[in-house]
Figure 1: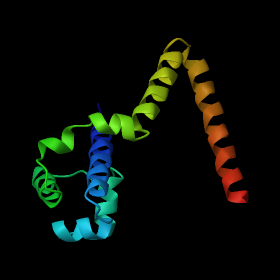
Figure 2: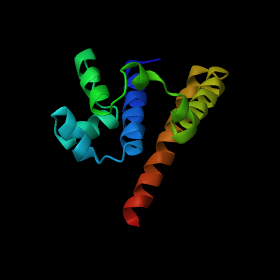
Figure 3: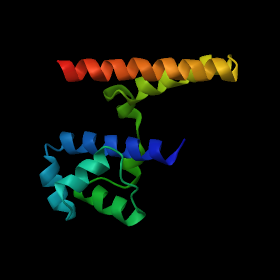
Length: 123
């Protein structure tokens, strides 16, 4: 598991716990002494947190640091698990192909995403 995967999972767990507690991002951020922009970045998994920061976040949500790393309910309540499964299937399919075919598949996938993004802009 990469660090970014852990950051995303911890962020999703923080969001899950915050919502269970009925807190807005701003309220949770105030408990920790950070901005709601920072809290949002943490929830999105775009912040690499120190152990000290993890302790503050856990305290703000009245849970143990250990609880931030228990992801069982996230596997049920979020898209992360399903996205991971899709990525694993795609990875398995690519491993059965040559490097050239894999690069071609990646190019096709990028074009599909570009088309989807362009369609969103038009709407």
